[in-house]
Image (cartoon, rainbow, N blue to C red):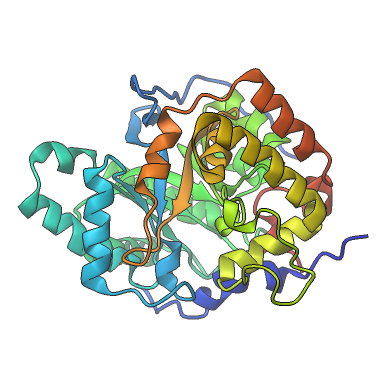
Length: 384
């Protein structure tokens, strides 16, 4: 039996940055109505997520800025912003960050100002900044919520946040509904363009929709190894139009040629797990089926990748983008340290055929049911 590590292990990075948060000012039926839609352009590179009158067009491959929170290498501000400009120039102009991701929001603020000064209007029009608010579960008053949103607006140097994704630690505290209602009011007042969620489970998403809070998406962990979102969440999303934005899709880099044909059981015989993400997703591999089965998966992905002339990571992202209810997938960016612009853009032209999909599905299904092992989306951050 695979040992599932306690919640504190899954929350290695999230809790470490949470501790640094600065002080900042019977389920009923959901009404099934066409509140959201997705449309893609000719190259399948953009998506419009819509809920009622609220909408946001964004790139389907999202640049994740989690790595700026520490543990992935020292980030130089100027080099990081230069890298953000290169991504935007290449059409990868949607960036995901959070109030707790170290200087991420500040870097975005510097970046967006350089875009305004140094790039033509058509580039600025495509740039999107998705941020998250991750508060402690205290009383959610209007002034407290607005004060925190104003901090993010100031740091990102925008009058209106493109998307505010809300996280909540403790479901026993229903204050998340108060917070979301205040966020909806701030949206109506022009401080937020779209309200969304991150790491909410299916039951709470249903409750939120029953309270007529117009969320457009839920950001969740989703990869070939972790298919939990397709077991419960995706069905509700398809019924209501809410979309999924996924992270952990390349498992911190585990889904790559670097880890193909390696044996981590032998000390110093393979690549080191030298980032918080690699350590986190290695535990997910252990929970799913172990390193031997993971090697089988990598071998299958490598065969498909070589067939299409792309890297393993591109196949992994495309497979998840093709899943029901998925609007976009995150690829982490180590700004100024490494880049994967070409590989990320290759996702948009890659078409997996029936043989590819069947072979991936076959090896993925050999692993354990992580919904039963870990729980629903986001439960890895809330297990006692």
